[in-house]
Image (cartoon, rainbow, N blue to C red; front, side, top):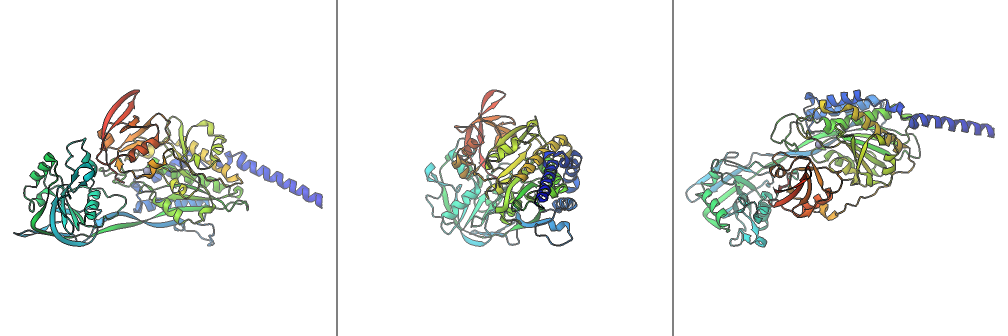
Length: 609
Ligand SMILES: [Zn+2]
């Protein structure tokens, strides 16, 4: 009996070994599920006209979510580990969340100014408007004109030095007295939100900002992008055009010109002028869905750990904020960004589901939404995980894997666990790519949300390109052969990870200059850095239209070697350098273009997101 048992066990081991070989030694079997035809089918659907760019919160994004959920269902994934119901509906795979998608003005926006002669009621949108960072309230008080509303004694300029604005409504010009002087130090104080904060700190009840006079157009109101924070500064802030202000402050343009000419603060309490301001803004809330599919593992020793594989499926819809051409209203198809990663996610789910009985660890496939609006979907997931995060073995992210050039595949997060390096280099397909790695687990995609929760991450990315965040990122531009190779390689990595006994250890990656990234960066340049570049400068993979970088003549493929006197070796130096400057600063940037050095002047703007 004993011996027999042993023989049975031996046969069992042989059988298991044979099965394992079939499963993992000869990965061809399951990789056969990953085909360029299916990848292309997914991308062409997700990036189709019908899906209108899948902006989070739109019905078109929901169509994409349903498509993904139906695929998950077909592969036999479950909505959650503890799923008990025998039937599954596509909506069961959804993890719904809400997010702030914009700001709208309410009914009660009023601006009434009483002068000695008359009471003027200004018309909303024609004469003035409420700025997005205004509070919603009402207030009144005497009006004080205070130049540019800049209080910078450190730079020998203070509009509030000779006047007490406590309890009053302050009227200022946008910009600074230096705005015609690219070298002026005062430009750094011209940000409107900062002016409102300064006014509030000095005790003002409200701030009225006059659009800088333009000889040709006195009716102009500011076009301000909503900043991502959606935060109010705590006092009402409105913008008036020159035409309207002339009714309370005669010769407004002349005063402006004089201020610029003399560069001397000039504040004055306007004679018996009082204002009443009422503001009402509302945040717009939208909801959207992460799509989550679960695949159960079999090894009782390992099934406490789940491998998370993710890709965001949302994109920019019809453009606007986040687009490289924000003023162009056109479908941003988002084929590479990130129908490609979503297609890869689906193919991986299908391949692993096909041989689920051989899986050791469990897997969670997540298609994230609202990534483009600030990694909102993945942040929501890590705060509301369906499996406790301590049981998450690692997170593998696919974002833009359809446009590989020169056979170069980027892998980020390699420093977030000691196992990654050997796990990647030991795969059969490793040598077929030129792999470029970056240790950092942070970065502009969903894996960053997991990294900040101390989960090892890997991020696969085939690089930025000229169609990035433009309407021209279309399905016909994707290289499906290359994409299939990438997804098969990712498959190898995950298969191997799946059989590892030990949960990968997490490592927090030290960046060379942590102070640089910890300080808030306030400036906007408009460059798209190559995050995986070698040392010796920072390569620029693209430049946003109309941005400070574009205006300075910086082009794609330029290498920045010095930024405002700071030597740039890599992206960390660049991040640090950005933190050193303020909006309005004019700095010298030395670039290398085709081997030649060139110095350009960049006029830094304030950050838009
Ligand atoms: Zn994107």
